[in-house]
Length: 333
Image 1: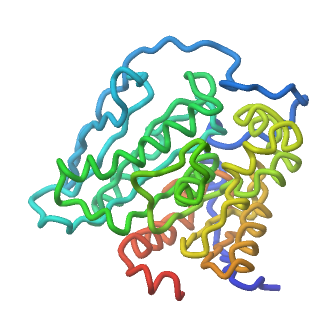
Image 2 (image 1 turned 180 degrees about the vertical axis):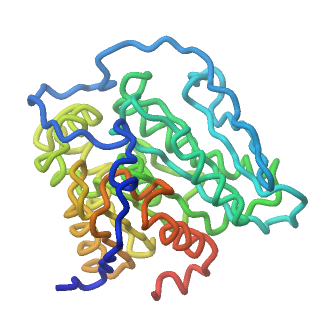
Image 3 (image 1 turned 30 degrees about the vertical axis):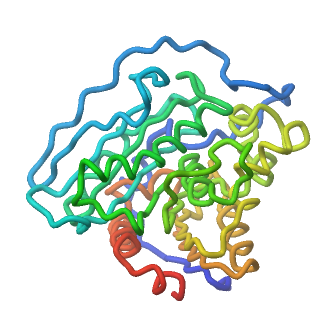
């Protein structure tokens, strides 16, 4: 049976797609023990700042620049940076759509922005600018609330970045997130609805559309269905222990019917239950908003973001379409 507003894709999977995964990219399925809530940063170890990785080499048709989105006095140079991928050549002002990528990894330090270098290059080769952000995570000085502050500040830097890159079009920016990054991306698209005293409130910039890939978008559900350890770690406790934190950053509790959300989820995802995307889609529809859910047979938590997946090019085509389509048309799909 096909659910309303849900597209189920029956793909011919290859053996390489099933095997090609980044083990560090997913949200852990280990629920772990219930701990007392943390009032500051949810990290078990200290982190000594080092240096950011080198800027990747550009390629034919794609230039890459390093962006530092935080004031040096507040930043960890190893973590608070982004790579901006630009279509090579001269472009008219405001003519290159901007896409932001927020990587996943269970809000932990085991995975970083470099895992989306290939996707960023391909999107740039299609004529899009890509802002691939790094941020502090548990194990690299992040946790509650630092991780959320970092992502908010990275998004808020977009207008400043556009001043020095006038070719960027930021009026209808797309933010893409994978796994934990999908939670951060969708939250980033609704920060304007937060109260003034909440982390990430009063945004200087808000995207007009968001894509979630394998995202835990119902955190109260996810904490009891496979992702308990990492969610309790990043938020500092259970929904009963720190309800205000869940209410503030849980995407399903912060719906904006005016924000179109496109969701991709593999039905063989053993890290983040596909019901997260189903439940979020149903909630958006109930609120009168636009959510377009694509479910893929045989695809795992990480296979969707790798070229070897039968779904990859289909997803890339949809990302390009979403990034360039007029907002009213996207809302009325």
